[in-house]
Figure 1: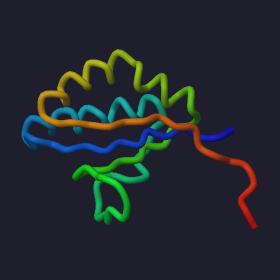
Figure 2: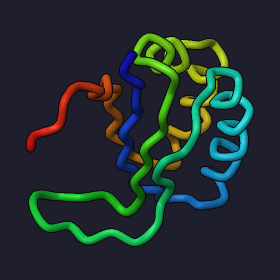
Figure 3: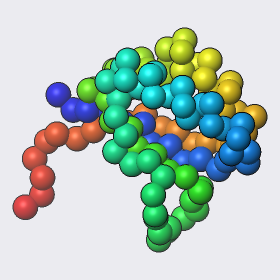
Figure 4: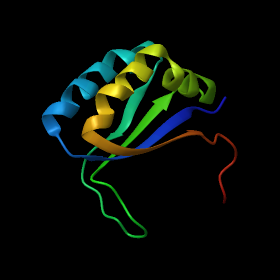
Length: 101
């Protein structure tokens, strides 16, 4: 079964206001089996536009990734983040089929 992923791009306007959101995410993601694959780090924009922070969070499957986003805990935490950042977030199903040769 293919994993599910959150791919997020974020511009933070108030680091201190954003911190409680980031801290609360740990227990939320743990509850849903999520783990960071990418969390900030160096990056180079080679095409298109970017934001200052990038994250990829892996979940056991696509349905769990959706359920975590829709959970009451995460929905409440979004309200903590929103005054302090602008974010783009997609939830996508991973690929576990054959690779090109």
